[in-house]
Image (cartoon, rainbow, N blue to C red):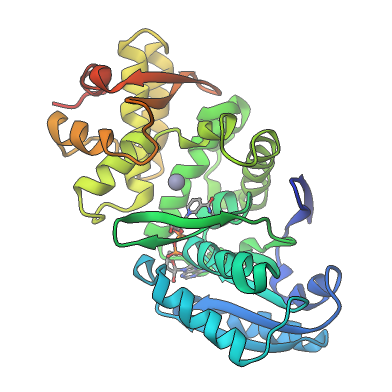
Length: 352
Ligand SMILES: NC(=O)c1ccc[n+]([C@@H]2O[C@H](COP(=O)([O-])OP(=O)(O)OC[C@H]3O[C@@H](n4cnc5c(N)ncnc54)[C@H](O)[C@@H]3O)[C@@H](O)[C@H]2O)c1
Ligand SMILES: [Zn+2]
């Protein structure tokens, strides 16, 4: 088992190891005295992995309530959030009780926001069950739900008390969901770890899951520690996301997040090459690795659509957009690009 300490405003450990799900109860008892625990999960994940977590928590003396919702991003909204809060109140949960988020990023974001706001904050544990949640959303304390006007528009920075990551839970993931997570994994290599990128080139991620998750969590930990509240350094995690979000939006979210990020990364790598930031061979290796993991690298949308979607990104400020630009594999910089200059970047990225 690997233990990764995150020294954020609330310090906590991320535990990465096979078979940890069955030890949830004992691990939870290490951070809070046995109390009421609400296991929040989507119906798919609960069916597959809920019982292990619940049994283990009960064996350690917790009194467990399971709160489930239909799987999918559509559930990450104020209605589900409100329903869960009302359940907690009806069950007389107090500030010294515990929330357990068992699932992917949707569950983690939703349950985390519940934990951040119920009675002004109760402790919570993240148990990520998707690759994306393991390497990204379960660490760092960003919690949120979606509004009609867009994704993640209401939320809080609220760190968990513990993250339990059991790579065995990923074995039940649909292939496409696993592949989506690989886009984020490759992102970490491009962003700041050339050795890791090379490891992904030589050995498939699924054959080295514990290592892959640990490396990504350590990198995310470093970024979060440097910039917990997302004012600068943390923006580097948006590599591939500025164009990726635009692609998701144009597709009306029919292109998955991971596929969109892969396309966004391929685009920014090409743009970096064409604008002289990145050597052609390096940019080609980035695109080739994405393709090797079954991710798309060609963009099926036109430059004008991409421009309109990218300029309306919520992360755009004062008429400029921060692009994360690879200078090579393992090295990136933030480039403040005026909106007026975006078409040049999109064209350089291969948009027609
Ligand atoms: N908080 C953050 O820092 C952060 C970072 C990145 C993404 N996010 C958020 O994460 C969400 C996406 O996360 P996601 O891709 O994990 O989505 P998700 O939670 O919807 O999971 C994807 C699908 O996989 C299923 N699933 C999950 N674990 C499974 C398992 N072990 N076996 C079988 N099926 C399983 C789920 O039921 C769901 O249908 C988005 O809402 C995004 O905004 C948050
Ligand atoms: Zn992402």
